[in-house]
Image 1 (cartoon, chains in turn blue, yellow):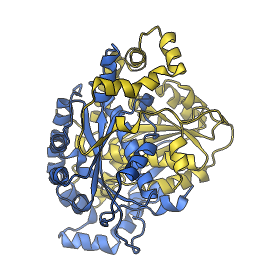
Image 2 (image 1 turned 30 degrees about the horizontal axis):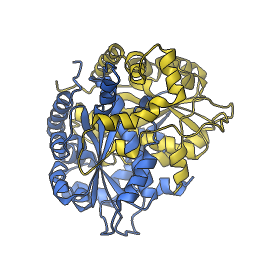
Image 3 (image 1 turned 45 degrees about the vertical axis):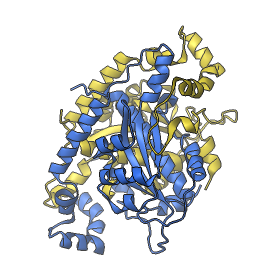
Image 4 (image 1 turned 90 degrees about the vertical axis):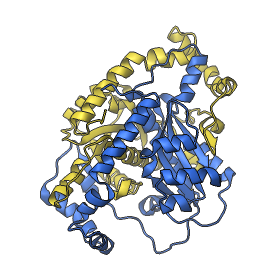
Length: 252
Length: 252
C-alpha cells in the first residue's frame, strides 16, 4: 500500500490550467465503481460537468465558493433508484424502493463511490474538494443537471490538477483515541474533550479566525458563523422536501 | 497509484483465524481519519468490537449473516455529533445541530471515513464486508454498543484476514456509460437498460438464483426476495424513529 499518501493527503481548492482529459476521468470512474455497493445494485449516478454554461448554473448552488468556481470540473454524485427501477419495470418486477431505508442505502452507495473516486483521482495526480453544499441546494442542482425522479444529489467534488503548493501539509485531525472506541462507545469526560480539541484551538490560524469573527472561542465560530442553527434548519427543510418530492417519502 | 487493486478488489465474507492486532487497526484508523470531513468537524465515531460477548449481541442485529458471524472484528461507524457538541458546551457555544441537514453531513463524513478505512484495510491485506444491516437494526446496535444521544449507526464492516480464495475475481459491475453522465443527466432508453443489465442477467450464478427462487426474472429476486417493499417500509420506520429519538428530529 501507500501509507504515505493516506497520511498526508489534503483537500485542494486551487487548480491549474492543465487539461483534465475525458479519458483520465473515464479511467477513474471505471475503477471507482468497484467500491462496495448494496447488493451490487450500484444505487448512484456520477455526473461529470465541464461545460462552462452548466458549471455557471452549478456555481451559485455551491454558493460560488472558490473551490467550485476555480475547478475545471464539478462531479456530482447522486443517489439513484431511477435506473434500477427502470430495469425492474422492464423485468416485470414490482419495486418497493420509494422509502427512507432505500434512500439511505443509495446514500451510502453514493458516498462510498464518491470517496473511492476521490482516492483514485488523488493517486492519479488530481486534486479534489468535497462541496458540502450538494445537500443544501439540491433543487438548483437538480434543475441544472436535469435530474429525474428518484435521483438526489448527495456529494459533489471540485476536480482539477492542483496548483503547486509544496508548503501545504496534511490537515490536522483529532487523535485516534478521540474518534475510536474499543469494544463499545465510551462517552467523553470534559477533560478528554479539552485534551482532544486543545491543539486545534491553539493553532495560530484558528486563533486568528476567532479574533477576525469577534468571537470568544473557536467552537463559537462553528456554531455562530459557519453552521448557525437557523441556516441548518432552513436547509434541513429544503433537502427534506426535495427528497420526498423526488420520490422517497418519509414515514413520519 | 495501484490501479490493479482498485479494479480487482472484492468483498470478503470468509475469514481466517489469523489474529488482527490492535496495532494494525490503530494504524488503519490513524490514516483513515485523513478522509475528507465537513468543516474538519470529523462527525463520526469508529467502534472496534472484538469481545465475543459483545459480538454475540451485534450478530442478531446483522441478521446473523455469515460475513458478520465469521469475522473476528466488527467495526461500527456512527454519525456522531455528541463529541462535537460536548466541545461546544465547554466552549460556551450554542450548537444548532439537532436537525436533518446536520445529520446528513455526519452521514457523509461517516461513509467517507468508512470507505477510506476499507481501502486502507484491504491494501494492508485484510478483507472487509459492508453490513448493510447497520441501518436496519440501529436500536439493537445502539444498545449493544452503549450509544448516547446524537450518535447513530450508519455503516458496519466485518473485518479479518481473508481465507485464501484465488479463484475469486472482481465482482461484475455495470459498464461506465451506464452509471456516468456527461455534463447533465441523460435518462435511459429501454434499450440502454437492457444492454447494461443483460450481461448480469445472463451470468450462470444469477440464472441459478432466479430458478432457485422460483422467479421469472433476476429483478424479481431483488424486489420480491432480497429487498421486498414491506421490509423496506418496516425498516424505514424503525430507522427514521431511531434517528429522531437520537436527537435529530425531522422537519416534516
